[in-house]
Image (cartoon, rainbow, N blue to C red; front, side, top):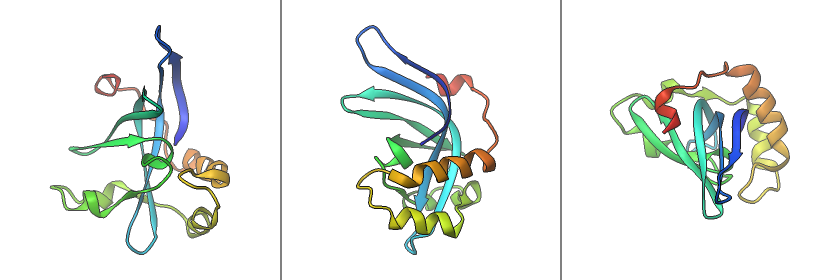
Length: 135
């Protein structure tokens, strides 16, 4: 989910690109949610918006809201890598976690997006556009 959009455009063939501060959401086996915010550029690929989300030396392909087309990414998929992945994440408050799991959205964040975006805007500082994120 974009916390702050810095650039959005359609190219000459009608494909969309959007870039800005993107918050990816991760879940563990206990339904706890964690978040990280990075500068990301999403480009249209068919019906999906797809881009790279980098944490440390790990590149994660993200798509749509939350990083996994509206569903959180599995923390276990990335915690076995060469860095202690969880140290780059911020735990989402319990009231927002409960609101997220109780929402009736299907593959979308749905009504919790306003509260999550507001929390993320207060929690994560604006990122600066980096040359490597433009590619």
